[in-house]
Image (cartoon, rainbow, N blue to C red; front, side, top):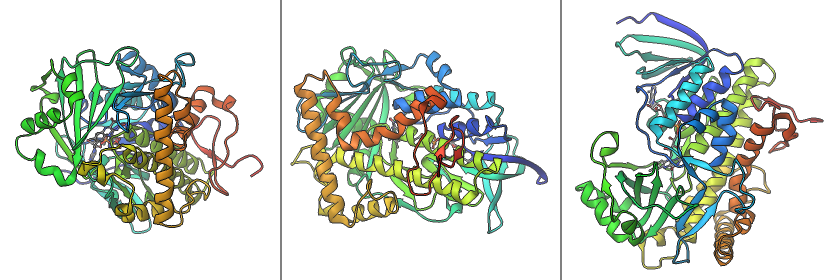
Length: 498
Ligand code: FAD
């Protein structure tokens, strides 16, 4: 084995998932030399199949992957259908305000991640990124002051050293190197769930125009996702309390069937379906301990994006959004520093501030979403009420968003955070009622509710920028002294007159 193989790049990205490949493409587009080291050979399996429109029409448009995604034949997702809240019947949250205003960008895709992630990785290659698969990163070169590069093993077992101005950790929830930025991974108590999931052929579909929607169904022990990945293939997962992990520790097949039996809606949708038992989709999988955030997102020479940094919860499809959005923010910071237009501290403070803000926005939205469901006899749903029981969680939430503009997260203590969350979940529940009463003809009440409007704000801004470029108009900083995106969206600039 050789140990003297040494190369130099501007940026080395660890992991070629949606976060890593998006960042790599956006940095290579500014002419920098970028290397992706990916331990697997693509296509490889990953969970996280339901997307949001801003990923598809915003960030993937900017990175150049949008046209290939459009050609891939993914199922069109117009929104989500939920058996959730006080209403006994499923209701729908569409991405367009009304059928009449449904535009060419008010949809997302349900994706088989084996195909989606490969399209994004191939796009990075086309943008000039050097992509090396079956190359696990084994260590970080850190001289104490800054991170200088990584070591990795190639497919033949040879060891290599790569030095770079920046190392990007995009290696997901299994990251072994995130600790190098310092800080700790803080696990959430509130979202402390376990997911058991698999694939079915022949499941039912919602009536048109919602047949491509994700269906989320609450039941006493938790909730199910039901994601149509083709006309016949469906991804089905149950989310239950961490304390109920024993329920899924025996034979997972029996466990999943028992959970399906507890949920009449999913049972009905799967009544004529058979579980896939061969190939990549043939295995039932379990994921736990997936809700966390790192207390630091960067240090000189290294930055965390995507699941390496944080993840909230599978409900409402925020994972790939946060991964690709953080990739965009970090790419702007790296591009600005490499071009010498912004100093490192300012560029990465901007990255961390915006990333934490978006994470906080989704965190609050998803807590309100869980709080909104009513089932007084269920342990799962009682634990999801924003009450005194979640005091520690609310204190962590305050810490998480501390320093982020006061009007957005004006939280003094756990009591004020609980009050605000209760108000927001009640407002959200009222908005759902209004939409249901109006026979879902208009989504306006939902889009006007605080948690939804905040959750959609950044995504739609990026979508507008990707579509209109300079015509999108000037942005405003999100904190005093902060930066704004350039017209092409690829780096940071000082605001006009700032
Ligand atoms: P990943 O997609 O995990 O990619 C990381 C890559 O790094 C992998 O390819 C891995 O092989 C590689 N890697 C790891 N270690 C090394 C190493 N040492 N060297 C080199 N390469 C390495 N999100 C959604 O948007 N919609 C959903 O419906 C959804 N459902 C979910 C359901 C569950 C139960 C869970 C747990 C998550 C769900 N998510 C969902 C979240 C989604 O899976 C992640 O947020 C998303 O995959 C993160 O992308 P990433 O690029 O950060 O990491």
